[in-house]
Image (tube, rainbow, N blue to C red; front, side, top):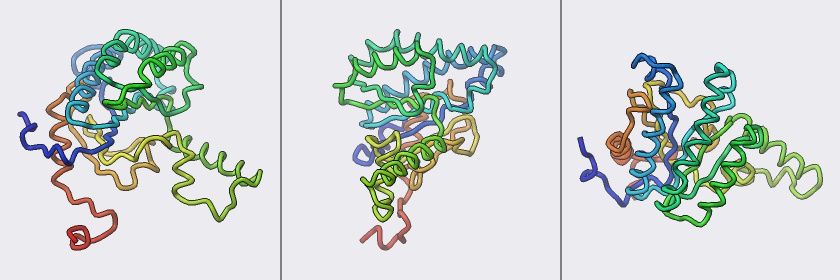
Length: 247
């Protein structure tokens, strides 16, 4: 089903974040090894980035690898790292031509050197692009991010550049890895699970959530449109009441 004609292009979320879940289960469902599902998930990423750019989304954050994912079988983790490097090498020309600016959040310094190098080169290559910002959450943990922000602020208090009275939401946000990125208005999770899994805990305070029952490799343009349409049919009150929003 095509939802494009129903979507209000004047009410597109500026920032959409996606928890890309279900690659392994999709592969097992199709009688394949888990890693096969991650390879298939690349097609969904390509389709989603293109669709988001066409709709005017300015930031698309993809939860690609969490801190907890290191606990998966070594073969799968090694395969994911190789897939990241290979995919960026193959896709960087197309991303650059399509005006995609690549960004990352997470503990990138804790990733393999080959990944760090490829990411740095890709970020440099696309840094002037302005059509859409593709943010990869890699070696990411919201709790880690918040703890790191607290450490930074504590150090500033220690040296006297910030007083405790100056600590507020704005200061906290400015010390997160997402400091240069607006909070997401819409968070999508695939595979039918209904949890955040340590993803953008601070930033998601007033985000709308959309849970798709399909596995990530099956997610495409139509599913993104459906999620956005669902978002547009909601009333975002930010703690107020309906009458206050209308007036």
